[in-house]
Image 1 (cartoon, rainbow, N blue to C red):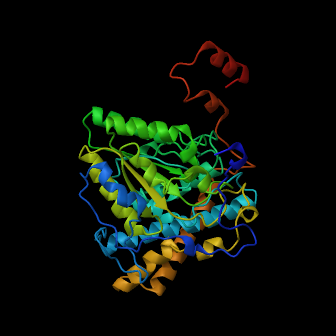
Image 2 (image 1 turned 180 degrees about the horizontal axis):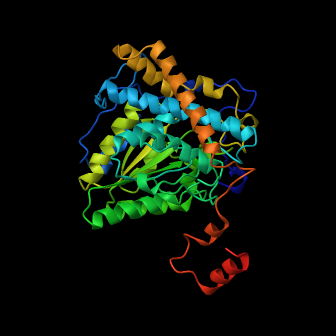
Image 3 (image 1 turned 135 degrees about the horizontal axis):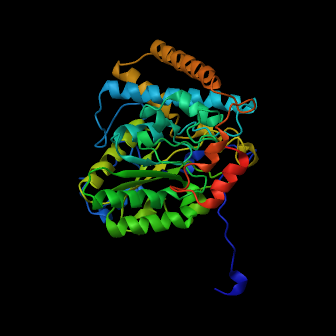
Amino acid sequence: MSNGDTRFHVPAPPFRPGDTPDFSHLKLPKAGEAKRPDPSVAAAETQDLALGLVGVLDHNHQAVGEWDPKVSADVLREGLSHMVLTRIYDERMLKLQRQGKMSFYMKSTGEESVAVAAAMALRDDDMIFPSYRQQGMLFARGRDIVDMMCHCISNSRDNLKGRQLPVHYTWAEGHFFSISGNLGTQFPQAVGYAMACAYKKEDRIAASWIGDGTTAEGDFHGALTLASTYRAPSILNVVNNQWAISSYQGIALGDAPTFAAKGLGYGLASLRVDGNDFLAVYAATQWAAERARAGHGTTLLELFTYRADAHSTSDDPSKYRPKTEGDVWPLGDPIERLKQHLIGMGEWDEERHAALEEQMTQLVVKSYKEAESFGTLHEGPLAPTQTIFEDVYAEQDWRLKRQRQDLGV
């Protein structure tokens, strides 16, 4: 090709603000079509799964196909409860941020099943290396809501002592690693942790999550190399919610057919999963966990979903995508889909759902009132001043000791 024929290519989203979104161009396989191989299958034999879509709930909200995990109605109701709580919590916390009661917030609207189903499919002692939109995992593991809120408003009960942005949670007791604002760091950390588990002959595994945009970071590729080389017992999740903060997913995807396909090049079992299907996420995570524990290495999961709200309170998505785009997303709302599945089973109804929403709303309101009893962002009390010298060095050097003396703490 001559220089005169060269074109500089920049991937563009299919719709811009003011356009009428239409996702008919997405050729998504039907739920139940994907085959479920044995978890010991060779990574190369998962190509069809990396290019297809693992789905369980069909258009009638019925569970179909080989990937149906066949969990009990009690488990499904528990999952629904965690997802409803996550959404109500998010809505409340956003309002509080808009009222100036916290500095920053990030919602997970539309992605609740990505977090909740995965956490429920893992063991409680498996280590989680999350990104900043997996608060549902904390609910699924039983984290105290008051503690989560105290962190977000940086009061005296904040377990991070004011050192992290709101929603950058950590919970060592719950095997929930500190969320980092530096994107992608958690992927190689998870693989390293998993390698240590294997080295110590433990059967625990590690799982981590990043967004589609973060696959453009070097940490993504370094983690996949380590995972492949050492057959680390880990699960690496790419949450493809179609948008980074304002960047279309095609920027990071490039000419690859799917994000899951990138794992094949590293010799990893790779699956693309309907991220708005609780049963599909649960089943895929369960499969990958079984594979990891049996010594067959890491699985890369692409969770195909949609960020229904802003990236964060610092973002205005109306500047880069149509306001109605989320309304026509073809894979629907994860909460509504699981709700309708349970109703179809005869295990749920609209009255019980309304009661659940009211129960969770009251829980969130009550929890925030309690959280404020430990201090507010503007009025305090905050973490004691001397804590700025703690938790960094096992033994403080003379400069820190001198600074602390100068402050009189």
